Image (cartoon, rainbow, N blue to C red; front, side, top):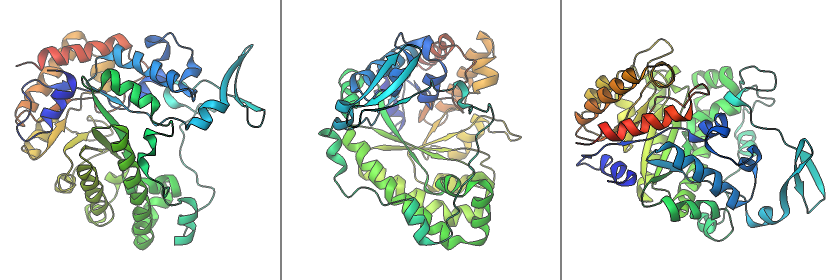
Length: 380
């Protein structure tokens, strides 16, 4: 079976005989390992040229062996024609031929560190505390047809990737959970304070961001995606009751919208699931993905499978640091085998994955070994 067929079988009620393997957040991996998988210069990843976007992503897909890949939404044709990346001596410039202006661009920083070499945390300059302020910061989605990606140039790189890999690998896109947007709007302290003190404002935010997510889902379907990765962060820090009121209904509507567009949903809940297991399953996603054990909590894949009990597919949570980055060959093989055995107890409704992104210290050869071992051990 090819990778796409493995994943589609895992998402079906019958489950898969041959289990697939994926890598979450491949864009992070690409940023942190650029010279290990492609000969293209770093600035190609920032180019509006769809051939550039197709070319480096093709190299990444071929280097890993992962059974899925992310479909990009590119620049519209006007930007492709008028905005160029120009190398001038030691500088790389983005040149806009419409205005004649140019700006210097810098390489993406490995690990996502800021120029201050500190961890980036949202510090909002404006704190919206009215519906009108939220609406100003989060305008409604475009009122045009999201299927325009087929004709306006934004879907060109995705189309090229689908032509080559669409049958053999499973194409996905990412969408954020509606409540997760509260962090980007208010920062951590503001988000948690409003969850406790002004739930009407939180509901307004979620409705607003859900409308935008609906547009993203329709656009992903038009682009050719088969699945949507729903990212949900920080919401392990709110109470189960708050989660049920402020997060769950919007997640359920999002999962339903994805299903209505003929795609699968993969719900990635970041954090400790304690006290929220039934809420996570009530989302109705086709697959549940969780972090590895860390941050003072334990998420054992055998326990996950026991709790899910075949109600949806499960993605593995192989430890990206202790096993993938630092573990021996024997430890990697043993953990892959253990996770696959647990997945088979979920009726084959299982896809091996990592609990978090590939670390900068993990060589690409090791990533490929992880995928190759998973394919070898995932055969019946």
